[in-house]
Image (cartoon, rainbow, N blue to C red; front, side, top):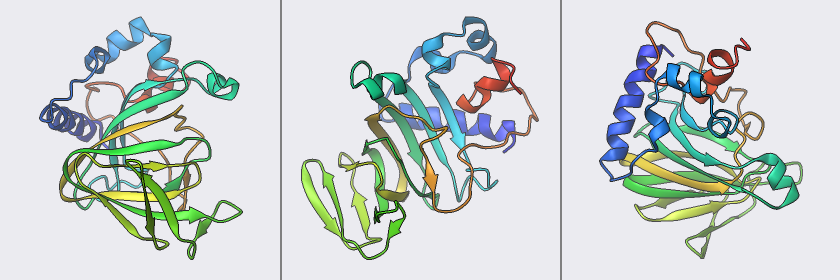
Length: 229
């Protein structure tokens, strides 16, 4: 993706989020220079911030997702079972824009339709090896009520509705009728290691630097802040 396109998506996404009365944290608006000079471990090491992905495929409008990680605990705390064991994201999925089929090994998550159109999820349960079970009935909690679907069934969530996805449950999602603002509340989030995709795709975008970054993405931190690349 070109940096100019990323900057445009950030501006559009911020306006969309604000239209629902959701206010982003102050660090969301720090310049790259401010973030680099301050380098707060609670933001950089926890990988809080902007995350615009086309899954490395170069077609964001068809295959992509807008995310902002608001808070995130640590894997060390999670392994001990004490401390900050949770994470929160705000996301945007667009009409005709797929977030591809994937599962998590560790993370349990509530996916919440915060406003807009319908949020549609295609769901499969895992088999004993963790792969997609194309025959097993799907059972997921939706706001305290168990919903049952055939394998590959479509769960449609109206604004205000949510679904709990436990580790191993395969899911893909998109918006129907209008773009959707999504909330995610989960156990500790690790996008570097805890995403398993059906297809051999990447989690992050490759960025072509055609203009200066409006704000850094979490995938920029190693290169721009730590100088690792």
